[in-house]
Image (cartoon, rainbow, N blue to C red; front, side, top):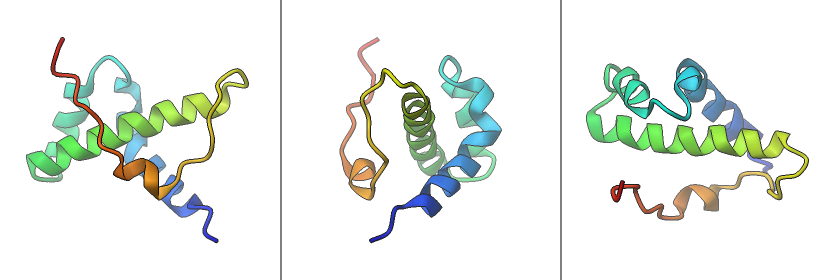
Length: 84
């Protein structure tokens, strides 16, 4: 069974250029990715990267109850934060 470590590495490669913007400046991350991809793809990548950076933080915190990332985690619909 695949442990998805290659997926983690790919997500890390996407996250590294915009890590400094997390968590307060997603628009700067979007601007970075939209230079490389169409807007809808850039927005999707920012959403996934933000979740991945939080996942990394959770995994490094011994008090956070989490588990390794799986493909199923990427297919769960997330409600966009449009109410703020």
